[in-house]
Length: 84
Image (cartoon, rainbow, N blue to C red; front, side, top):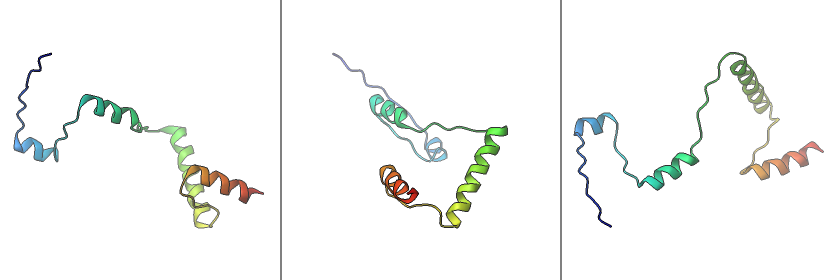
């Protein structure tokens, strides 16, 4: 199998403007892409509902009604114990 070498030219100005360049093997890039969290932008009623939910959560946190846990499984255990 013969590999061809490719030449890539990057201008210093372009690299500085973009604040750097990362070179990854395609498989690593695809793995990172698959593991990334998608972005969602809500508008209208969905955004308003989420805003109210966040406000309620912040209020409960200020009132000391929340729990602290280092993992989701720990949080579930604490919640079940606290709910009794």
